[in-house]
Image 1 (tube, helix red, strand yellow):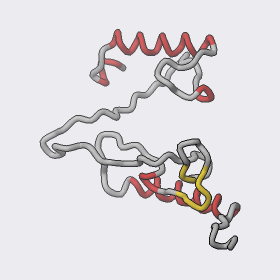
Image 2 (tube, one colour):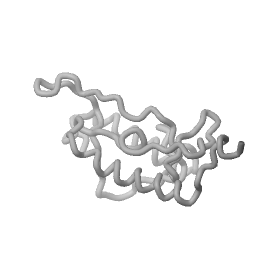
Image 3 (tube, rainbow, N blue to C red):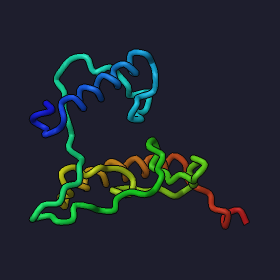
Length: 136
């Protein structure tokens, strides 16, 4: 797998060993994966995703500004620095979700928009925001 991906086999082996050791011991993932998703990698199939940034002749600047907003993953609500949601303020599309891999291709964000827009809309419908203007 390392050879097919063009990465250092010893480095991959070390990374997987450290991850599995932590997972089996119930320790935090060395790379920061959230605890609820940590499971030992014990049997194939395995997959690697290339999320590297490499310029090419056809795409000399493979960088886009995406996201930047802290978002509640369950509701789509924009979060304040203290982690609480801002009532009535939601985000959708690439500002809310998504990760480009092997560069951005126009149109691929449609799924991000549909998923995150639906998530935000459902939460907003169940939790209508009351503005401070309405209270006066």
